[in-house]
Length: 451
Ligand SMILES: Cc1cc2nc3c(=O)[nH]c(=O)nc-3n(C[C@H](O)[C@H](O)[C@H](O)COP(=O)(O)OP(=O)(O)OC[C@H]3O[C@@H](n4cnc5c(N)ncnc54)[C@H](O)[C@@H]3O)c2cc1C
Ligand code: SF4
Ligand code: SF4
Image (cartoon, rainbow, N blue to C red; front, side, top):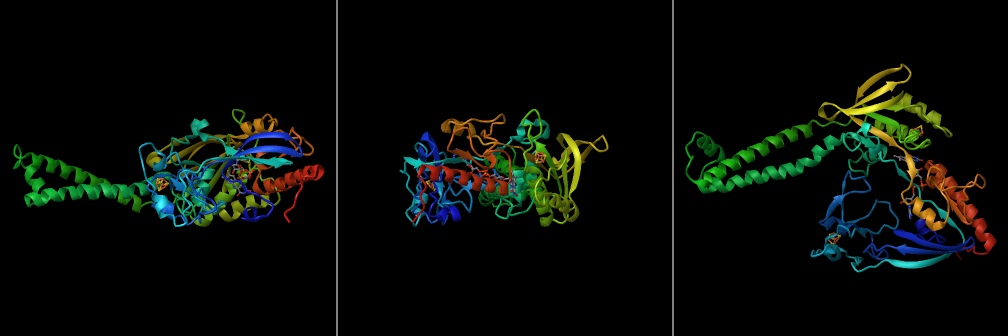
């Protein structure tokens, strides 16, 4: 919010850097602002367009756990609060198709299907790359079952479950139970349609479907009217749909919150096959998520499986202990070998208890994988654009002193673009990088303050 309103900050959202020329104190940066097909200066963020948009897709922000529309706002607090059309799925952009509903309902007249990308050049004295991180793809460890066993999720997905604005409004369910809840309205529709289909025959032959089917089964109508065979098939289909609906309804009625939760630490971190380094923040976010889960559900039993808990930071060890004392979190010193799927989609964790030196198993409702922090997908491309080097782990290379200087003068970095770190550390580094940039600007005379 503050950044959006600050007189000295120009926020160029939905934009990408295409070219960087020049040197410290005098860089020329070519920027490409992608078309939103919505005029940012007119859009009030009311959401009337998304409400009426007929194109439904999976919600990227909620990691596919909810639904979004072809015209969307990535997340509620985004700045600017303007909507964006996803031209890859919007009907108006598909050959031979038309829509235009959002343009009709938008009272602000903000929709502009003809909007084009804008290319422009900026003159800047210094550059800070803060391109962050991406999470390790847990599918690369197939023995943990992510993507195959549906009740195995990532910590980021679990974070969305815990969020009041998330797909489950803060309730924690097994993914398979959620799927049953989501399937219910569709099944109800199928059932209604099948039952309605019988009404035509009942009217035509002035008989209930039950009476007809009993007599049909006893052979009364066989070999006669073809319509009778069709009616009989429709009765069988409607009965099957009703039975399936009843099973689903019972299942949905009996759904409870996921009570037994297990976090698996170091998924892709501290592992010579993938990333040798510790991802720094996952022990703490697992404890945080465990404590929140217990706040939401006093019956929750939470287990954290890991080689050790790395609570490095002021007050972090106390937070770890609070997790054990107040939220009853069980820390299990272990190495998880495999996760299998038991009855009713129950994940079973097979692990070596490294204290007792025995192999054990534990069935739980949900497994949450704390996946590693890796350089974001664009890091290599951005490094090439900026003419800076990467280190052995693929993060931007920096000097040991000053620690946020890259291999090219005038270009600095901060946050997880440097290495895995939490938000307070990223913010502290951002201030530090800004101070280094200000030194360059002051030296080159390009420092300007808003009047
Ligand atoms: C599940 C989970 C829970 C967490 N919980 C906490 C917590 O409770 N507290 C805490 O302190 N930390 C937490 N963290 C860690 C936290 O996410 C990071 O510390 C923080 O996001 C780092 O900020 P950053 O700005 O460096 O990187 P990012 O948050 O990754 O931001 C980088 C931004 O740059 C953008 N970008 C990338 N490439 C380009 C490009 N080429 N052009 C334009 N834009 C680009 C990205 O889209 C992104 O918006 C958690 C992490 C996880 C995975
Ligand atoms: S044109 Fe139609 S499909 Fe496209 S975003 Fe607008 S309402 Fe949705
Ligand atoms: S922070 Fe914890 S979970 Fe994450 S890599 Fe380090 S030790 Fe493993």
